[in-house]
Image (cartoon, rainbow, N blue to C red; front, side, top):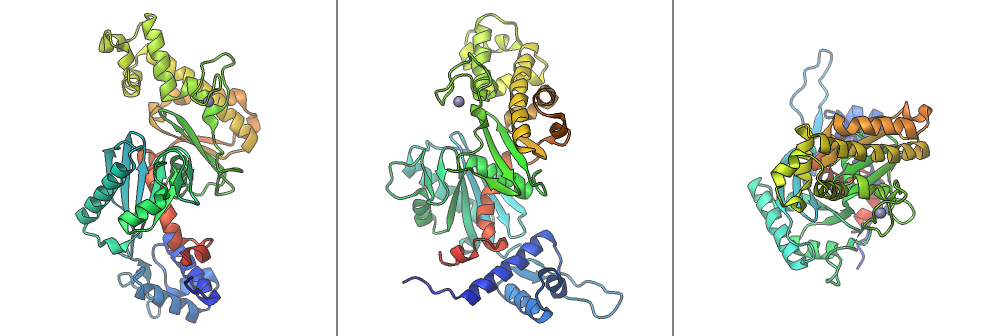
Length: 408
Ligand SMILES: [Zn+2]
């Protein structure tokens, strides 16, 4: 039977989430602060504050001194009131982050992914890793509010299905994981998760129109427009890597010719470097690789950039020009206020930033490019995991989905 949730209890839950969200932005609050910010009456604010304290979401903070009159009781989020887990499952690497209710990091681990096409092995490994993390941090599993997963490839966040992996199972990945873990699970595409990470924890905080561009083995982009993640008509928006930037270029993994990914992704750069090295272009990489030029990795190429290898520097500079040209197109179309770059290529500093900036100036209107910041992410490798936790923490801090969440 469907659980009965009355309109009054939904309204109450919305108010409580509003209050908790207010705590997320302001660490110490009294019931009268809450009343004035939420437009609730003081008795109502006091009663809801007490309920939230009874439920363990907030606690009385240390006594505050007051010069005049009776000191107000100040509350704060209870760090032990609940925990969220955020997990990114990449084709090569997986990462897990554990946060408390104040969204402070308790633990972060990284491990090599088992074959994502092997559903059973993936779910077994995940389950073991989560158990290890939870017991290492001495947290009761019942206090985990949920696990947010960020997955590479196509993901239907609503149905909890990956359209790229785990296709051999009739159940959705969300159902499989919930059954095994006994914890609520939410799923999102990895680029969207990185973008949510930037929005709540990184450099997109307090911005309304931002592009988060991930420059790594491939190129991905998440868009925040009017302060919300923008998915487009069918949730596929942001494929900046498949803008055509070279007329007679190489064939791309998508089947088209001359996409940005063919010349500016880690994959494209390594392919081009190998081709040129085989044609005898001078580089310190030749000494390192000997006769095994095809074994070149992206890390080796980027290390060569850092050590000033002219050949590698020029390759990255050329990639920067194409990336900048594509960002210029986005700036003209969307009038962005900030572009956040992440991924291994963004760690090349000025070697890639200068050509990006100069190409943006050439390919976008001055009125708009004057007004946009190009910045490097400061949460980079954690961004996806942090973003994944927000799919769970929204149940506590946000009000838009309260009704749907209460029927789960
Ligand atoms: Zn393409």
